[in-house]
Every structure is written in structure tokens, then in C-alpha cells.
Length: 468
Image (cartoon, rainbow, N blue to C red; front, side):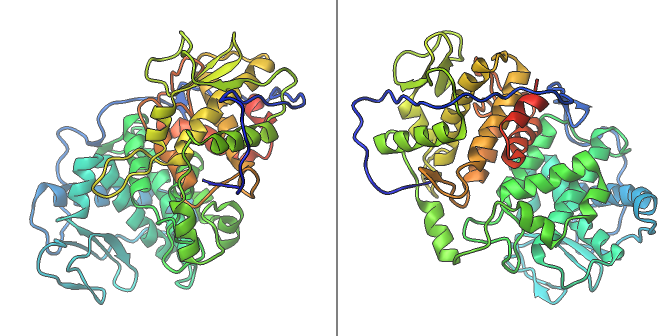
């Protein structure tokens, strides 16, 4: 986060706002909070189905271990998907990959597509030789052990997405960001097929399994200093997750529509300033126990949401009795106040540092407080504050608030802030997507989708229309 320079003297921590009336109501097709893009929310195992036989694809350089078997079977499954869908959707036959290569980045390097694999912790597609290669020594086992098998599935599906681009004739000169986000989108389309139970080899749950995929996209995002227009750009976590959700929700035809103009229109990664300037802005971390920071947050909320009644006050008094015990912020509807656990919010607002414990980053903390403020808006509009629909609406309105601080004001988004929102929404007890009792939506995919709806809507009223 960035905040304006200057200092405002406050008489107390309770910050009162004033504004004019506005509603979040309306009529539109509601989104079922018990489903993910129309599918039932499940939390079963993800990965190879029990008893499935190996596909037996030849792997150059493989060691026959479990990681190579998982990767080769994932490739076989993704290719099965494209053999069915490329002709049906694009009227093109899918030609199987020419070569699969496994290597150990920690071992003696070999040359693949003109590059040495020594120290190359990566997976990649080489169009010239029609090769998909993966690091069995570092990347894939790390993803499998720290996140889960769905992360490995996603990485291989992404690389085969590049092979799909080659078969569809996407120009080699297309910007990197277009290639990468199309591939993320194609990954979403494939995993939708798996989630629907259509894969004979793999399974993925729409709750925990898709959380693994979104976590993988967060882990392999561009650093905050990279602009979407840079050579080699893949996208920040927010934009990569958006592309994945396009494919999961709308299918491969939507993915092919991703082009430079489309990316430029929706990118939250920025395309201006030097990498050093972006890195410096991302490194600025604002603490919520700073009175000016609280004042600026309050001002941004006042400007985003207009309330007819007295706005809620921020306080460090006793938490509401109805909220979960570990909630770092809570809205007390009867008292019309937002209680803050400032120590806890500072902890979650402290970014992680190598070798030291940390939280997520300042935007995660600010957004948790903003989410509780939106409950006052919902109460004024006559909406229920408890239940999964309220949690959806809260995430949507918090996303709308984030969109209002893109271009400056009391607070301004910095590179990496929206990635912090993704990270917060993938935690077990996310407040950004929680109702008044602190009960969060069960699926990370649904939390992010609702937040993204609000961010891209341009109007707070859309949240009340869609989530009712």
C-alpha cells in the first residue's frame, strides 16, 4: 500500500465517517454460494485416481520414480482432453507431443532446446522441437510436497497449453503475457473437465484441490517489479488466477480470445515506470497501528461507500460476541462499530521475509478491515449479514473498494497488493470473504471470483444484484 504524505491529528482511535446514501440492491441472477462455477463444492483427494494404470508414455531422461510417473500421467491426461476438445471447439486435430523430457536441476546439466538444465528449476515447452520438459529434482517434488498433486497437474497442463497455442498457430512473436495467460486459461478449462469427473485418470476437488491450483499460481507469479509488458512476463497472481478462472468457467474458446488488448484492459500488474520504482513501491509496507494509516483507510472507505446513517466507528474495544474468537476485525451491528485487533492485524500485515516469520502484507490487513466496513453498508441496504451469500457479497464489495484506490487518493494500490488479497483469501479463515460471524466461504475459488467481480464491476450496486 502507498498512502499520501502528511499527518492528521486524531483525538482518539475511533474514526467517524460521513457520507450520502447509496444502495447495493437490485435484481439479477444470483450466484449459488454452495457451488463453484456451477459445480458442487467438494473437498476430497486430488491427483491420480486409485488403481489407475500408468499411461506408459516414454520419457527421455526419466528415472522411473513417482514424480516422473505423476508428470507423465498428467501429460497423457491433458493430451486426452485436447484430443477431444481441440477438434470440437477449434476444428483442429491435436497432434501428441513429440518428446517428453525429465531432468534433475540439481544434477549434471543437459541441453534441451539450446539451454542447459543445470540449476534450471522449471518446466517448459519448446515449440521448435515440440518438447515438454520438467524438473523432477526440484520443481515438481517441491510443488507436490508443499502444495499437492493438483499443483503438478496445473503446471503440466499449462505447458501443454503452449503446445495448443502452437497447434492453433498463435504467432511466435505474440507478447509473453498473452502466451502465458492463455496457457493459464487453458489449464482452467482442462481442470474443469477433471472436476466434472470426466477424466479417467485424475480427480480434483473444487474446494481443497482448486485451492492447491490457485496457491501454485500465487507461488509462481511474477515479482512485483515486473510489468505485464515486459519480456518474459507471466502475470501477477491476481491476473493469472483471473485467466485460470476464465478457462474454468467459460472453456477454451474464451482462452483463445485473450490477446494483447484484452490483457492491457484488465491487467492489474502495471505497465509503467521502471522495475526499480515498482519494487520500491511494493516494498512500502503501511502498518495499521499508525494513526495516519487508519485515517487514510477510513477516508478511502468514506469515498468508496456512501452511507445515509452514521458510519461505523473503528475501535479497539471488546469484540462482538457473535464473531469467531480469532477474527482480527469484527463488525458489531448493534453498536455500529468495527473492533480491531491491531496487534493481530499488524502481524498479518507484515510481509514475509527470507529467514524470518511474517504475515502476508499490508493490503491483506487493510482489506480485512474494509470487509467489516462493507457490512455496515449491507445492513443499511437491508441485506442479511450472516450466511454464505453475505460472505460472497462482502468479498465482492471489498473488491469494489480495492478498485477505487487504484489511481490514488488517501491510499493507493502498490504492485503486489492484489496478490496479497489472493493469499489472504486462500487462508483457512479469510475475513475478506466472511460473513458478520467471521465464517468464510468454503471454497477459495468462490472467494476470489466474488472479489474479482467487485473489482472489475465499476459499481458497488452490482454486488447486491449478483449476490443476494
